[in-house]
Image: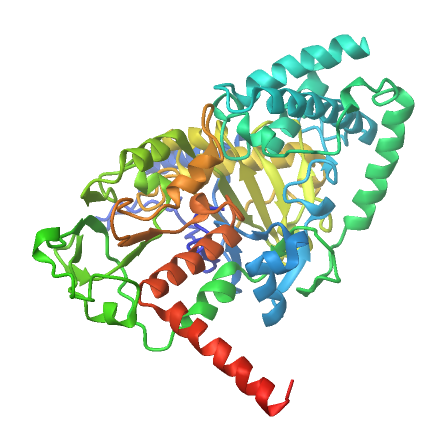
Length: 569
């Protein structure tokens, strides 16, 4: 996800003063009887507010933390597309470095099939057959949506419209009764996870569905036996088996042989994996931090002032190293960097100039094609709540990775099952992830605890209503240097927009600025491997401007000839 390089936080030493109720007048006077009565009332009021049954902002108050450090990624924490193996550079690197991973339950992050569902209103487990019924119906909807999307192609239609039409078709085709309120809530949670994990379905374009191509579901919506009660029970049995098999996930070194194409959870975080690895590999490269770029201008001389024999401006060769540094990067603190080429890796949200604290002005302006592309693509919100409880206070199933309820807001990933003692992470997608702007962190944490305690009410009470000792709430949508989590396809946009975003600047004449990031990657769109892959590609493009690739190619034939002459392999 977007912000993958930034999202690691130490959850530690958040000790709170438990004596806040002990008022001090500050004047050294002894309390009178009247004062003591007032204080008693005040304490009583405070206790009522902070009781677990009134789990609002005050109810989420934290207990003193232990000194132990536990790290949790607040941005990306999964490796996707591991089935690609050689084509997935981050997976390759994880395998090479022996990075510790755990398999995602069911093979995909936030899987709704390989999860235990509990009703947050009653505290009772939801029968797997009920969840299976919703999943089967959803799969038939998906099959119909794929068929329609391939026909409509890049029409200005949302996933929500496609889904509505498909639901109506499947309902008439199957002659089924409508969903009960519980099933409707479960179905909404499944569909929002499948297509609305960073954007609302109403604002997600059909290109997302059409991009699937052949799904293996062709004709699925018209097969009568699929969705029958007998079939639903078969699916439920398979789901139960899968849930059992995924309980208590094993932590192991990344290996293609273990887990096949399943998504992997990067247990120790992306920072010590990717960031520290790259830092160790870049030698004496100068890295300036806390620099907010305000303007990027290209001040090349006019064509008439350049001589035809001035090789600093013609062809890609090592002589380009001597060309004037006519590209100027100006920062908000007044510092200026003059260079020959630049690589821009800011998020799509920053390119959209959503915040005055991070907006970049371009001189010359970005091409109209690129500006239209930036406007057409969406930058969505996928936020998280991370809560840490004492080991003895864990009141949910400790070894089950995925825990869900019909509540539309929180999708619980149990990091305790992956060896992070007492840690619970909540994924939150739109529109709920966007609603936090008007809420304090304490309020958001209180709402998450309220749902979690409702799912496991009996155990929560038995554990004497524990509170988290530490918590973190992400706000990627308001972070000025992110302004969203990662990109998505809006209605009317297409996969071509990703290609256009990847084009260098300027698009006419010599390329001087190259772009990278998940939104500029066709291979790893929305993912860390996309950011990684596009960064390598942009770096190679700059290297080619200096003729480095040409030099390597020139050497290759000579080496081959020499080996042939020596008669060696």
